[in-house]
Each structure stands twice: as structure tokens, then as C-alpha cells.
Amino acid sequence: MAPHQLPHVLPAGDFAGILSAASESFAFHASPQSFISSKVSAFDQAGLTPGGVGKHPVIRAKVLNRKVAVVNSYKHTQDILKCGQEENNHASDPSSLCSEDGSTAEQETFSAGEAYNELMRDFFPPPNLLLQDAPLHANHKVAWRERMAALLERVTPVIKDITDRYWDTALEGPATIDLYESMKTLSWRILLQSFLGVAENHPHFAKIEKLQEDLLRGQFSLFPVSVNAGMWRSARSRGLDARKTLQTLLKSHVAASESPCPFATKAKVDEDDVAAHLLLFTSSLAVKALASLLTATLLNLHMAPGLVSPAAQIRSLQDCAAQGSLTSSVLQETERLSPPVVGIMRRVNRNAILRSAGDGDNTLLPSGWDAWLYFVGASRDHEVFPQADSFVADRFVTPNSAATSFAFGTGSKECLGVDLVRMCVRAVADSSLKKGIVLQGAIEELGVRAWLGWESDVGAEAWRRDMKQLPTQRPVRPVKVTISQVER
Image (cartoon, rainbow, N blue to C red):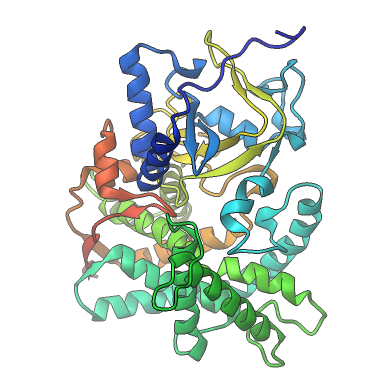
């Protein structure tokens, strides 16, 4: 071992042969939670101490032919996302991340662009903040933050109107609905109206929705080859064609003299930059992520187990501030337990060490590997959250009473749309409370109940059977609920 080098071990596990590696990729794609749990169970059965990080091992895997370290602890996830940022190494809370000699890990230790290029670049090409790293990312994000702040102010009343009309229509329609599918429909209306000024009756609405769905199927196809054989085309080939068509459509939409797009201003804008980001903001991936979070939020707000629902508790409070505080807490707790996107990747550019939280071994993240940060595990870290697997409606009522979630990432690469998404979720929740909405139904699948935090100690098989986790989290089967109103 080199002088001054910290002692360490590699992430627990080994790399299988070609066939087994393909099997691991399929298993990971089918259910990350089940995949990770099965790895941990194998360590337990073998009597191993995986990675020296107690209940949250750093697991070694091979996914899509990449060497991957799956990171499952809150502290390690936070420190990787904030690597090299000044606020991440206070004396009272030192970083768990360092270089091999124990010195502070620099920002260049990890990159997002390298990790995402293979998966995202063909479908969401540059210029794209998602694929950028410092220093280019910092200046580009400043410009987009200004645009998003102006957008938020402009579309807030529009989104509230869409939401109010949604509940009014829902009350007039069939009493029983599939909540996730209904939230997906609402999410398409919100995002296309917000970013493009395209309402549901606009001729482009259905076309954009169809093209975006083709794009997503191509991006996440398990057959990652573009094939056009005349009578048959691969999902990837159709997805790439959809992306080209969308780029042309979005660019012309922005450039139109009377464009309703909020980013189409009289001032000169980089149309390629705007169109590239609109492609992502209006993507089926973004719609499904918003629908996932809305579904979990409404289920927790109106149907969480207990003597009375959180919605009933909120309505019973006389103080408006107390009502708002409990509503906010329910929304934050939902983000913690049920992040729409289960994790993100970072490419390891320099050897890095994750220090052990206790007496175990430090873990090496070798240069050239990918670190896959599993938000579902990190946000249920029992070292950080009491009753970590359980939905606690008032967990976040007291300011700074608990650590935050990773639903939108953290640090310099935090999701650009975080404020807009939270405003959308709050608008839907507030409107349902104001209109006296009551949701009822039987959520019996153990995997779905575990996703919501209604059941703990649920096995990996239930997660695999009942939940789809990629590209976003949602129940496998329809979420049937009945809609009614409280009697005034």
C-alpha cells in the first residue's frame, strides 16, 4: 500500500461473467430495490460485513457492462452529490468522502456528463444542463434559473386553474378512477401548458405526447441497438426518429412570431438551447415523474392508515398556519419515502474513499467506475430518520427537525425544476383540500404499501411484484380510488 494511503476495501461483491452480467442488468432494470435487497441478503447469508458501512453497504455490480458501486447511505449520497462544494465539510459534520491519502476530494472527482452520455445523449442532446459539469454547468444554470424563476411567477395561476378544473371534472365523471393514470393525464396538461403554452385542445398536444412516449420507450429499451428493417423497427430506432421530429417541432414553436412558449421572447434567445431543454422539460420522463409524486402525495394525504386521514386532520385545524405546516410536512415526507426517480449516476474520475461510519472498513470507489446513488435507500437510512421506513405525517412540521430528501438531488446539480414541481404538487394538494375531496379505496399490495411507507419490513419480492421503479416509480397495477366530497 502506498505511503499515507487510507486503508480500504472494494465495494462488497464480485463481477460475474458475461452471461451473469447480462442477467444482473435485466434484474436491475426490472426492480432496483429487489436487486439491491437480494445482494444484501447474499452477504448476510455468507456472513460477510459488506463494505464496512453497516446496514447500508456499498454494493458492487455490473450493469449495462459498466462497473457500478451502488451507494445506499444518506451521508455517502449527500457527500458525493456535494463533492468539492465549500458548505459540505463543516467541522461539526465532516465529509465522509476523501481522496486516497485522506485529503479533501475535489469537485472533479465525480462527473455527471460522463455517466449519462451513453444513456441520455442520443435522446436529449446538448446543449443540455443534465450532461454538463463544472465550470460550464455553473454559468449555464444561472441563466436557466433566471428563466425558471420568471416562468414560475407566470404559470402559478395557470397551474392552479388547471388543477381546480381537474377536480371539478373528476367530481362530475366516473366515481372510480385509476389515480396514477389520471395524474399522468393531469401532468401532461400542466407541463405542456407551462412550458409551451400548449393546451389540451391545441393541435400539437397529442402529437407531442405520442412522440415523447416513443422517445422514452427507445431510451429505456433493453435492446439498445437502432434497427430499421422496413417492416420492423427497434424501439430505439423509433425513439431516435421521435427525438428528431420533436426537436424540429419545438424549435419552430419557439421561433414562431406569435409563439405562446414562455421562453420565446422578443429578446434574442439561443433557439437550440431552449429547444433542447424544452425536449427534456416536456418529456414523458418528466410527466411520469410528476405523476408518480402526485399519486403518492394524494394517497398519503387522503388515505394514509390511521384513525383519520392527514387531510381530515388538516381540515380540522382552525389555524391557517398550522394547516399549511402539516400539509407541507406530508408533501416532504412523501418526497422522502417515494422519490419519483430512484437514483442517479456519477462517473468516478479519481479514486475516492467513502469513510466508514463506524469501526468497519473504508470503501474505495475506483476511478472509471460509476457510483449509482440509490435515493430510496438513502432516504430511508435508519441512522438519520427515526421510523425510517414509515410514513409519519408530521415529521417535518418542526423546522429543521429532520434531514431533507433526495427526491430532486442536492448540491450544484439539484434538479432545475424543483420549485416548479413542488408548486404543482402543492397546488393539487391544496385544491383537493379546499374542494373537500375524499379519496377512498383499498391499497392492498405490500410493495405499494412499502413504497408509501404504510408497511415496513416488506421483502424484495413484494417490491419486484408490485412496483415498477424504472424509469420512474409507480405501482404495477392500477391504483383504483373513488372520488367524492365531504358534506358541507
